[in-house]
Amino acid sequence: MSTPGTTNALASTDIAAELRKVDKHWTPRVIGRVNDQYVKVAKLLGEFVWHAHENEDEMFLVISGRLRIQLPDDQEVVLTPGQFYVVPRGVQHNPIAEEEVEIVLIETVTTTHTGDVVGDRTVPIEDQLGDTSASR
Image (cartoon, rainbow, N blue to C red; front, side):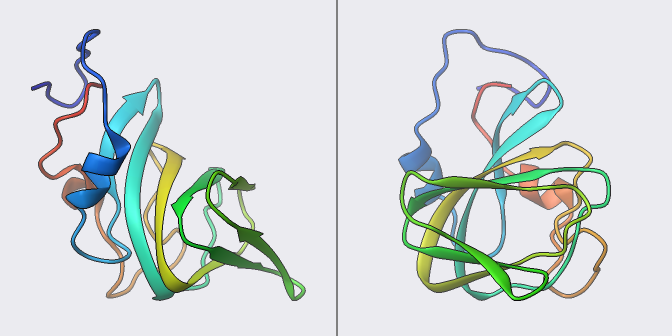
C-alpha cells in the first residue's frame, strides 16, 4: 500500500474495484495521482449543482451509464460509456445522471469539489482521499 505522494511502480489500479468501494453518490474518491492531477472515481445519480472551477479544467470519463452535463445557453453534452468531456476552466456546468453513472474524473489537485459554490454537497479533498490504496 502506498501513501499519497509516493509512487509504487509495480502497483496497478483496478477502476472497477475502486468504483465498488464508492458507496455514496456525488462523493469522489481519489485513486491515483499523475503529477498535479488527481484521478478520481465517483458514482452519480440525480442532479448535482451548477458550478464552475475558475482556474482548472475538469475531465469526466463515463465508465457506465449516461451522463448529461448542462452548460450555459441551454447547451449540453451527453456522454455514454467510453466517452469523455473536458469542461474548460471558468465554464458553469451541472452534471445530471438520470440513472446511476460511474465515472472517472481527472482534476488538478487544486480543484475544489463544487468549485465556486459551497454547500451541503461539497466534499473536502481530505474526505476524497479517504482510504486509498492506489499508487501515487
